[in-house]
Length: 319
Image 1 (cartoon, rainbow, N blue to C red):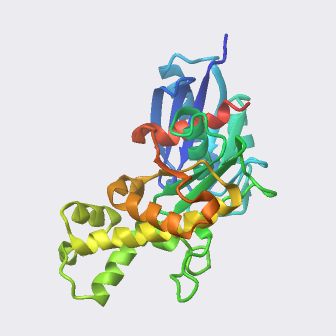
Image 2: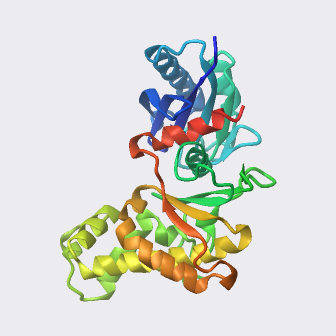
């Protein structure tokens, strides 16, 4: 039987999304299991394999699965291991041979593993906004800031498999916010969803400017977005500040890989009507003249509900 289908798995801190995908990027069957119900990996793999076998049956895909692609935090493409993933309840104890364990549980179906941002980049190149592009940078703006770098049509993994941690480049050199990675001033601490919420809280404390955000106890980036849509001046300024920092960082990123485009994905990217103009202005003000007004800013074209599965599934077509 022809093996013309793949499986995509997106492993998150709370849930794991799985789906059977065809070559056109159609998700034929999908399911979700908890990631955070286990303290060791063995029972998690057992439940994951059972869930995968069920959606294979649901899709009528027995014998047609070419491979499995997995996007996960701290995943190493070279070794197939998840290494010291502090935000996975079962992933904190050193290196876990995730690809090997899942292949065995799935009766020998090959498994390819990489981090979630690289998986998103692969998904855009296979199914989305980066089709036909050979050089681009994928930036995921969610709880953190992730990145996947593609040069000459190839994903950049680096010497040890962890290249592309652009969220942990320094954007504020002096008195920057402390990052969970142990550094200070990382891009992630300012331009992630959590970073935007923190900027809002700091600015409300430092000023007396009227804002609808003052009535909220636990401000989220979504609250800031909703306030900006209602014309709240402080919320709009927060997005201008966030976009300016992103543009400055992108100007530096452009210098090392000369991409055709920077592609934005993730929950915070939904605020594009407030981010696009300050990003482009700041990026072109700070980039070397060689690339001024040449690099496109593009937003993901993947259907949001399927994006994580599609991104991971793209890895499986490589085999």
